[in-house]
Length: 213
Image 1 (tube, rainbow, N blue to C red):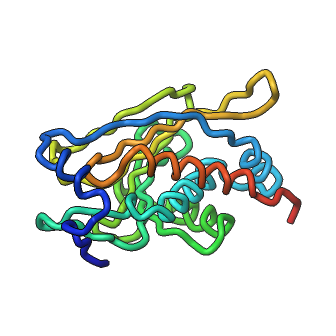
Image 2: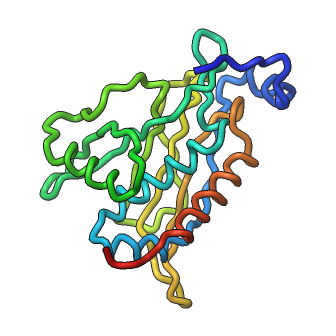
Image 3: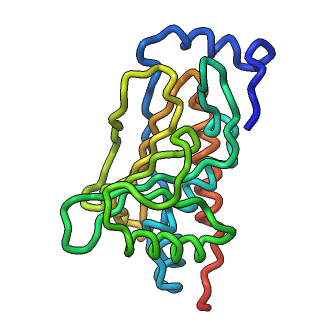
């Protein structure tokens, strides 16, 4: 973790414009082509949801602004962020939340999350990380979600991104896409950074090597 030098920050002017707002939060929604991911998970018999969590957080980790947090009035680059993700056990209508840090590979991650969620009996479980190191991830697989907003305290220094998506649908061209929504704090994340996040996520999905193990 390292403190940011705000006075010499490239986007200090932008920060100054938003830092006095009571509600500096905003939401951006877009569609992601998940055709390759669906093929990859089907061939390898992996969870589509946990696989997309892995890629989403890996893409977010590659962008410094998604890793910025406010602590005691200062801005810190927190290091690798950890997904805090919702999940629903079969036969239950009450969701749970698990914290599960990334592994070196996507396949390993799906195994790790499955192990943690299968054994979890409380609402919030998994690995113990400070809240500032988390990124909140969720999915509504029952609807073609166009956009989503997330609950949080009205704390203008809350810089934890919230990312959610809906079910994938097939277009006339046979491609599968889903709607994805990002909640961010404009004091640290601009539309440019969300655009870079989208580009890197799509690149990682399209670059999956689809072959049988």
